[in-house]
Amino acid sequence: MRIEYDIKLGFKDVMFRPKRSTLKSRSEVSLEREFKFLHSPETWTGIPIMAANMDTVGTFEMALALSEKKLFTAIHKHYSLSKWNNFTSNLTKDKNNFIAVSTGIGQNDSDKLAKIIQQNPNIKFICIDVANGYSEHFANFVKQTRELYPKKVIIAGNVVTGEMVEELLLCGADIVKVGIGPGSVCTTRVKTGVGYPQLSAIIECADAAHGLGGQIISDGGCTTPGDIAKAFGAGADFVMLGGMLAGHDESGGKIIESNGKTYKQFYGMSSSTAMDKHVGGVANYRASEGKTVEVLYKGAVENTLQDILGGIRSTCTYVGASRLKELTKRTTFIRVNEQENTIYS
Ligand code: 5GP
Image (tube, rainbow, N blue to C red; front, side, top):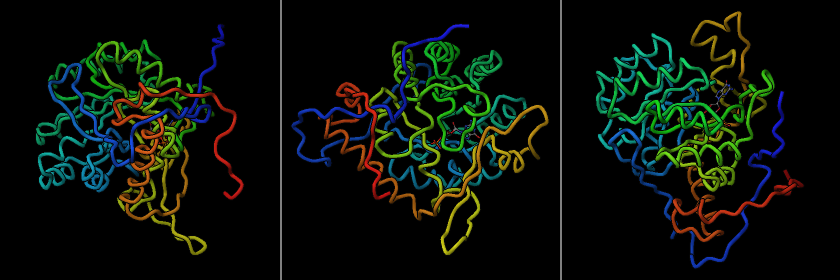
């Protein structure tokens, strides 16, 4: 047994130190980024915030709303081939830049992926998603997917350490998804004791990825626009959101009326709710690693997006970054023991 004693940090452990700036207004800040990829010949320009591939968040409706603002959606893997065909038949070409098709690593998953891509060749991004990205089978699946789809942008995850980021990039991933256990409806840390504080995971994984010319997505744990800004400040190229995009018109999940208030159901993809829905229950060798919650109904996602993007632009003005790309270079984090004043909340 070994213990690593250097402390690992989450979003709540730091704040940005303000810096002198020549920016006059947050309207001068550009949140768009342009990326070239390690393996795929594609280039991408947009605001690098993504809806998670959960069936309550990564919906076709969400993708239409987010792509209007040049934000990305990892579409969840439970849509049928016919629903995909129907969706893409109405899609303008530029919107293909803002969606990924998600897949697991089973034979059924790869067969379905092949059909979706064959019938919708304009899809550019594939998101290979497993809860534990440390298995050899997963790395082999990434390799095989790269061989089958040499031009697609491949996202693979989730991992939290630099050596596994490097391994997945070398196996053919362009972008590695980072995060084990930080999610709002995730119970992995409780059920298994496994995890890695998200800010440190980002810092270490971004360093590993950027050294090889790859990118990372910080996945999970953002509860405020400030957390998203911290993820970018720590070095994340993209930030993926679940809970912050739940509860909207464009989100999935049942509507629930209770005590005169309206809620929408939101649940983890390993929760018993999701497993009942998609695979007929929790298999007897495993435990659910996700929660089911009700979030207050929030209306159109457009208003939430404005709040998020406004917050990040403001972060950039506080540290003097005129473009999101510069935010990490302009970032000094201070370690803190307090965050916001909660007296009226
Ligand atoms: P959030 O933004 O809500 O904090 O986190 C979203 C992320 O949580 C997702 O992108 C995914 O990585 C993770 N996640 C979603 N469902 C589950 C689940 O059931 N269990 C676990 N361990 N993680 C989940």
